[in-house]
Figure 1 (cartoon, rainbow, N blue to C red):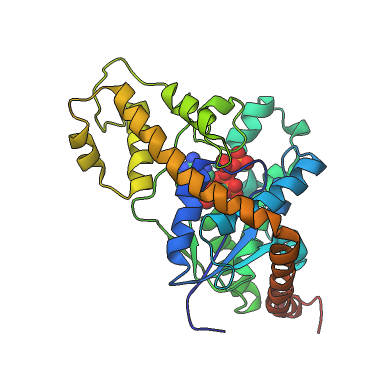
Figure 2: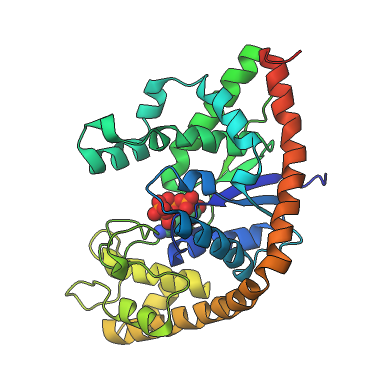
Amino acid sequence: MSNKKIMVSGIQPSNNLTLGNYLGALKPFVDLQKKYKMFVFIADLHAITNEFNRAMLLKNKKNIACLYCACGLDIKKTIIFNQSDVCSHNDLSHVLLCHTTLGELKRMTQFKTKALTKNDNNTSFIRTGLLTYPILMAADILLYDTDVVIVGADQKQHLELTRNLAIRMNNKYGKMFNIPQPFILKNASRIMDLVDAKIKMSKSNKNQNGVIYLLDDKQTIIKKIMTAKTDSFNKIRYDKKNQLEISNLLEIYASLTDKNINDIVKKYRNKNYKLFKEDLANIVVEKLDIIQKKFKKISKDFDKKIEPILKKNAEYCTAIVKRKTKLVYKKIGLTK
Ligand code: AQP
């Protein structure tokens, strides 16, 4: 193995990927792959913790693999694989679950938010995967002796749980896990929904008008941006407290062009929202057009070129992480 630091991450194939996934995850991954040994998986085991449909799941998995490459992940440098092809993720997850309390899982803000919005305190009908997925996430991280994990604000708590579990297990049975450090992205944007800027732009948001999907066609992108909610000030200012919507559009502009937000604000100081939105729509269309062209080409060759690499990578990962599960099993007394 090289002596580069190890970074692990994944995206759930729970729907088509969004501009939020691109700016908050894929774009930074592309920069980081030069410096880190990166494992980027298709988090299919996580995707089944919510409602899912077999045909869509298979389609989304293929699309994500192709989009990873189309967005610039270098399949020769970065180890891309399907999570479910590496059985140890589940094996370690079970061991970790047995060392976690119900209280710890119920305290997770994401569980509380998702569970409560679904069934108002009545947890009887909540899928247990929603409760236990942070432990699968812990297994995803700890299996690879991960040094650093990219964490957005909503995943901080899960990484803390991972670290606590690793320390707990190391103290009880002797050192078996590396303790991963959080990696806070510089200039990381949390892209918000275009219709309701109080919520994150998410793959599975109900109202698709607020979500730009990486595979949306040109007309759809233009329509979504031109009809994005804004305020009545008609002044382009970066003010997340009073002008949340336009600030979100400014962040998208800045992230896509790698420009400074203040410079963009200066450029549009005396311009109206319509003109700003038209320019932003062009920028998004242009960027996504490049990705979509690559995506089309890669998708055609998926069976011949991408799928075999995913399989080979899964075998490579299996070999690495089997050593880890073997060590854990031995330390805790499952094997001699
Ligand atoms: N709106 C966003 N802004 C910035 N970053 C984002 N990410 C997701 N949405 C935004 C980042 O993309 C990766 C996606 O990981 P995931 O699919 O495992 O989880 P998620 O955060 O739950 O993504 P979604 O799109 O919101 O999916 P659904 O709707 O299925 O729950 C992460 O690195 C995340 O930070």
